[in-house]
Image 1: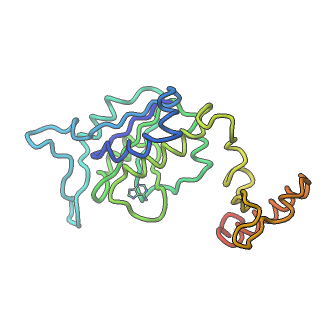
Image 2: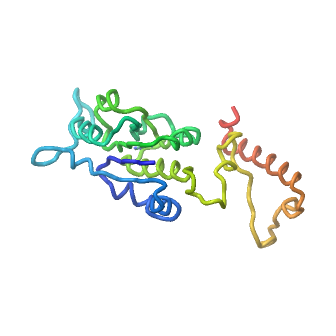
Amino acid sequence: MRIDIITLFPEIALAPLSESIIKRAREAGIAEVKAHQLRDWATGKHRKTDEYLCGGGQGMLLKPEPLFAAIEELRTESSKVILLTPQGQVLKQATVRELSSEDHLILICGHYEGVDHRVITELVDLELSIGDYVLTNGALAAAVLCDSIIRLLPGALGDARSPEDESFSDPNMLEAPAYTKPIEFRGLKVPEVLLSGHHAKIDEWKKAQALQRTRENRPDLLD
Ligand code: ADE
C-alpha cells in the first residue's frame, strides 16, 4: 500500500510512524508512506496556503489552489482521497479494515478552520475524524489513521498476534482484562480460572468479563 500525506507539518505526521512496528513495516516495504509539504504546491512570493473566510468569520481556511495542484499531481486511477477533519465521520475499526485493502490513500490534513469546501466536493472521497475533540491540525490524525491501517497489513504484526481477536473485531466488544506474572503482587491475585488450564472455562470467563467491561465503559457498543 502507498500512502501520501499532504500537510503543512510533514514531521508531525511522520514522527509517530518512525518507531517500532510501523517503522519496521515501512522498512519492509509493506507500506510506503510519504509526507508532502503543502507549501510546495503554493505559488507566489510568500507561497501562501491560507486565506480569510468569505462572508466573514473567525480564523483562516486552506486555499483550494495548492490542494487541487497537490492532489492532481499525486492521484492515480486507484487513489482514495481522505480529509482528516473534526467534521468527518468518526473513525471505527470497520472503516480501518476496509481502508486496509486499498492500493493508494491520499490523506489531506486540515489546518486553521478547515479547507475551502470546493476541495471536499471535487476531490475528497471520505471525511474522517479520529474522535470528538479538536486538534490543532490534521497531521497527528493522519498518523493515527496510518498506524491503525498499517498494523493490519499482512506481515506488519508478525505471527505473534492476530488482529482478529482484539477489541472492535467481531463481536464489537472490548477485550477482557488480562494478567501476567507474578501470580500474586501486593496481595492482589491473578483470577484462579486463568491458572486452571481449563480452556473452555477460561473462554467463558473472558466472554463474561468482556461483556461486563463493555457495559461499563462503552455501553454504546451494545446498542
Ligand atoms: N483535525 C483536528 N481535529 C481533528 C480530529 N479530531 N480528527 C481529524 N482531524 C482533525
